[in-house]
Image 1 (tube, rainbow, N blue to C red):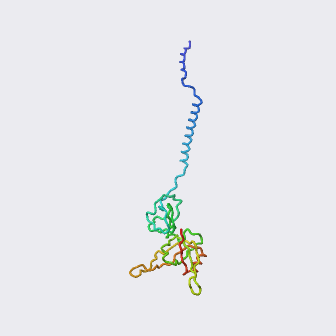
Image 2: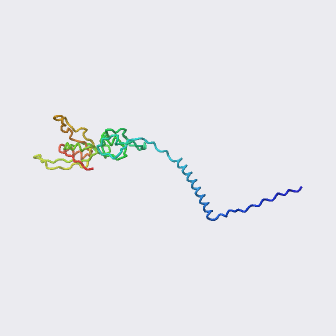
Length: 229
């Protein structure tokens, strides 16, 4: 039986597109490279997002709203709330500040703690071996200029051993810090209800042991001078 003949294939139309030149091939290579780089970057971003640790827990604390000086009596306008990493917070963070007196200067944004106030530990932040000792001010009028954190020099009046006449003064403590001042410096009311003389005559200063011994030996003869900040 004869095999039927297949019809001839239709002729293929010649391509009308021009052959790719060097510039077209270069453009295609660059396109493939950019696509590959984009896929790699996307995959890397997903990996980083997956492997990155979660943000640490935070806590809301009170910080200084602006630079505050020594002796400032705090109000709610002096502080603001801020979020801080909970594991970096110091001990003694304050949760209320109204009426609190600063024992030293505070910078804007600093977390407020009990060590920064007059109600905190007496010698907080002082070097090891520091002691607190009482020293007479000499001039009660100077008490209004004193506050915890103020730095002072202490002079001792010199007297003639025979006549008791003053002969000068020597500096027995230099650049020491006041750590506590009297909470009230007014004595009993005077005549007609006027304020009486000051009942306070001394403050506590932080010094080393040898300086404390010199201050004790000069009791009754000391005068404080305030140093410029």
